[in-house]
Image 1 (cartoon, one colour):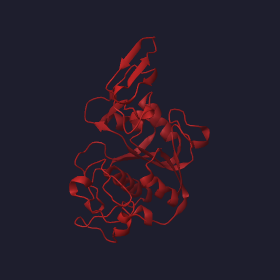
Image 2 (cartoon, helix red, strand yellow; image 1 turned 45 degrees about the vertical axis):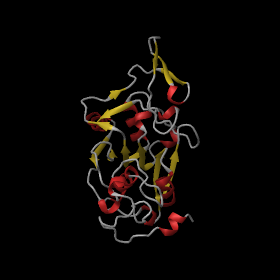
Image 3 (cartoon, helix red, strand yellow; image 1 turned 180 degrees about the vertical axis):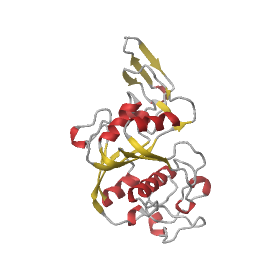
Image 4 (tube, helix red, strand yellow; image 1 turned 135 degrees about the horizontal axis):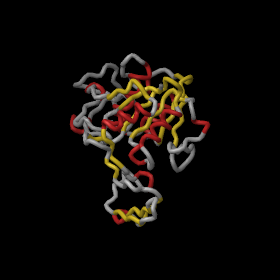
Length: 266
């Protein structure tokens, strides 16, 4: 047991003045500023961020159907519920694995899932799917990826989604002619080399990677209204933006962009 874990305090009834992490259940000692930063690991026990806590809160509220947030590590096991993750962070993936019949998948290693063309054994068999800041890295049409997320769910299944989005009129594709491409170089000198469908070579520098190389290249920033429209066209209903704050669980939003969205498969 780490020294941090040894000195952490489990909280039974969190309050805004004494918040707790809704993933591990331990007290959150970080400042309000750290708690409200989307990507700061502000829980010293499990390492949760605001994004992770808000996403798991949205998943639980909709999966259980009563709108209640509970500590993920303390809920009863429900192995009859099947879940699928897309490169989910170990912070919450390990807890989901203990509580549900859940499989975390990856693009480059087993268990493999390519959401551009999911294998047949994934289709139509999951009660929930978690996709957190993944779709901005998936090449090809945005609608196709969302349609394939619908395809891996059972009717009535739940999608819990985060993705960077903005309030601009249309989705911003950084490389609109992307076709056959590769990454060359290393570090800050990396470039994207693309050959368009009509044979033109394009070269791009100043690439934006989210935490790594290759498949973590940011390809787009979604427009919120495009995202909601595409979810509907892909076969989802009951689409909800989870923008409420829950300070007792360390869910405090500085910004209204990139918040969790849930949707039900028709």
